[in-house]
Image: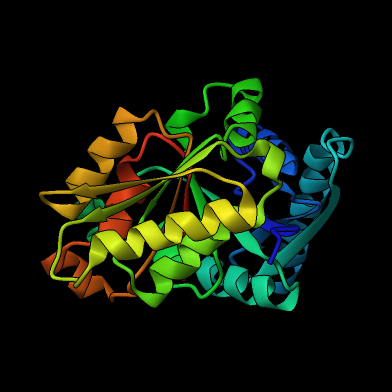
Amino acid sequence: MPIRKMLMPLSLGPRDDKMLAFACGLSTQGVRELLVAHVVDSSGQEAPVIIREVERARARLLEMAEGYRGCGMTVEVRVVMGSVFEEISALAHQAHVDVVCVGTEGKSLVDYLFSGSVSEDLALRGDVRTMTVRFDLLESPEHARQVACDFGKTLVVPTDLSASAMRAFLSAFERPREVMGKVHLVHVRSDVADVEAQLAGLASMAKAEHGVEVIVAVLDGDPAEAILEYVSSVDATGLITGRRGRGTLTKGFMGSVSMRLIQDAPCPVVVQP
């Protein structure tokens, strides 16, 4: 299914211009509708205060979005009240978006366990495809737009041949052919039978059906470390990964490849439920 409609939560902070510019660049990847949202925390506040906050947020969103209405997408703004994770998740379903795009600090595991991260929660707990981009990768609005435009040039798709990983691989071809370069399909050596043959079959299918060259690589070592090293070695412009949907405590005791990729990959990361 083509990626046509995107939801981008904003904090009304100084980095929002970079995120909007990044969203604008994603029009080259097929995005045609952008829903920009802000969540007002209504807990413990009286109604008049909440109303003022909602009006202030809506005015600020409209002001910021105005400069991006000519970038090939229709832009809509929405202000909701409540918990950020719950409200953004609900809005994603109500608006039938194809992807939620969020900026992230790239928190360490300790930071995650003690303070949490809405961006990582949306990617690892939510049930809508999520694109994350670390704020430190976006040097300026102009650079942010270019990072988005380049996303499909060198894609890395890790796979353990699970259903989630297969959806991630297939989703790589949902963007216009002209913005795609090579796709690197990587597997960290496991006990999966005939893995090389299965990967070769997927590469042949992609070439036949989409005209895209797929490079297959079987790696050794710790999955997260091996994938991150490979991503850097090929100068990946984008990464698409499935996820296992583990809970917070499991992340703490066993680690999570998806979380490490979100935190440390030197390019935007799409997490496919």
